[in-house]
Image 1: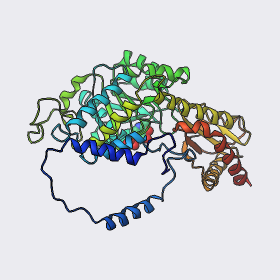
Image 2 (image 1 turned 90 degrees about the vertical axis):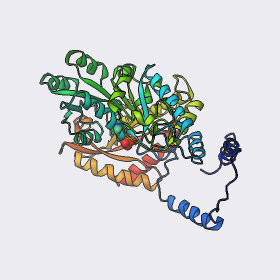
Image 3 (image 1 turned 45 degrees about the vertical axis):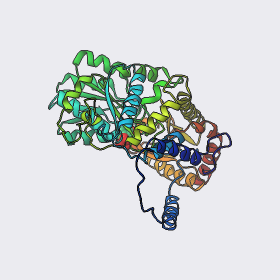
Image 4 (image 1 turned 90 degrees about the horizontal axis):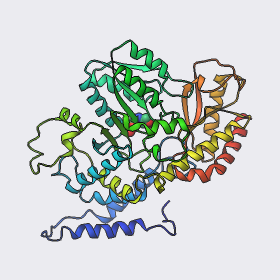
Length: 455
Ligand SMILES: Cc1ncc(COP(=O)(O)O)c(C=O)c1O
């Protein structure tokens, strides 16, 4: 973790060099006498912090294959740290001129990934804040009408709708965790729906809602379409999607608004979500006066088009640097990393599906795999999943658990008696490119853990 790979940069030395360069830009200022913090006290506290941080799962390691968690790219980490010496605030140009410009450039690049040359968009705290803003705009345009999302959509959509005072309804999913377009059609026919949220990669299983069918329904019923691509938004760049997911990602630019989280698959530190609107004119809804912050320039201040006020300019700096190093292009290194995670998920799924000790669910659409150990009943399979989770963790393989609808598994085919609507399954998010090369070690541990869990 601490040693740079032999061919990689020495990050600490690079940060020193970058700080000297940054410092040079302020050389004309008169020197300031500051009282530096005591070196010994600082060292004591920082080492204490390092000790405290040991109480974590090893998110950076390929054997951490549980939740949607991984450290940022080194260039993002460095750029973020560098920006901390300035601590820009991207609310207004007065608080962060360079970082605001970098945000506009980085966000425009994300918009271009969806085919949008014109857009309105900005960074924010994360997927929840970004969805809040997208649904706030939707609610302003379709006042009083319902927001609907699939039963596998992120739980915050219901909560956000409650905050906005808008009715929220859940649309059932098919057996692969995708919104059931037939059920959506039935609901739309009854009227009163203002906004449909399509999830492009659900949190539990990475399932992709059928955007082609949802768009056909928009033609007939006319509603605002918001795409929650917080998790899956970058996958359009991957070259190994199955045809249905490929079709959905190719249509993503047809949505009215899109949320994508650079702090999930975009290699960024937490605190980096992004909301985009296809029609820049929705910016009129954000209109407010802030004479004490927007006085220095007639150029757009990002706070004029966002719900949040103060925001870390460092997030924009880190994102800009990452996209500079790893452009968002098909066939590029970043795209290959996404494809590697998906290839790892397909490989793990294939092994699970071919092993009589396990029952795998449907083939993953992105890079998330779910499965259960076989048992006499679904309740026993849930219990075994919990045991296997613990046994694997004892061997440094960190998986996740998820409660999902029982119909995600073909229980009849697996000769498992169904004794409830829900089942607790094992879940693995294979979101690090390194996971592809680590499937063998992961499988070896799973094999040993399964032997112990079932004995
Ligand atoms: C599809 C989806 N939407 C929204 C969110 C919420 O994002 P955040 O945790 O960044 O607020 C998540 C989080 O996992 C997600 O997977």
